[in-house]
Image 1 (cartoon, rainbow, N blue to C red):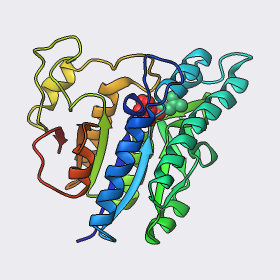
Image 2 (tube, protein in one colour; image 1 turned 135 degrees about the vertical axis):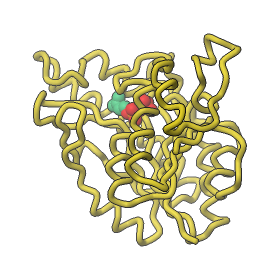
Image 3 (cartoon, rainbow, N blue to C red; image 1 turned 90 degrees about the vertical axis):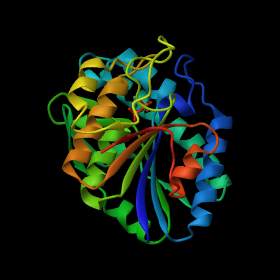
Length: 269
Ligand code: IPE
């Protein structure tokens, strides 16, 4: 049976978030190979939209210009262009690797087709994405700047774009690939005793919401907690869609995309 999966390669995975403008080329190549293997094995049965974060490219520059807070000063618009440029630079690198690996990837620059209002994504032109998907291509989007109806400009995260695409396309799964193995009850980098939460659903959400912290490094789109909360709300609105949060450990992405039963990561239902 054919399924649509939205796959996000997190900025914390494809870049070193503690080092400005540092892409993890080797990791991107490994992920591209795993994606390619899964597409080959499920030939025609797996439809995929890839999104990727901006990590130490966009977040760094957006924090400098406060792009997420809007047009706040004389540097804001030049800053808007600069954030867009570095986000696109990382996208160029990702695209090059995906295509060299043999994935029929085609990029869609979000800032050319979105409009936000504060936290909300008001408009996102998705028709071309849906069209190319029908012809076996793999659309690629990424966290980017967006013009904003209230504050002039904003930042639009991959999760926001996925939220919109999910409501239109009803994928069976959204897979977020991050730096850690899933959602923990506390930050595993600071607390080695932290425990992975295998499932998040109505029964434990309240408790988890109260405990979750932010992510490492500079992050203008709310860190791990915001992303998990967005996914929880989306899965509530779109049953039976699931969101899966996993790490980029070799083999993880391939197993998940191949539809294998896996015993790692956190499933949000
Ligand atoms: C952030 O996008 C976009 C910019 C800062 C330009 P995301 O929220 O999707 O990226 P990561 O995964 O946190 O890096």
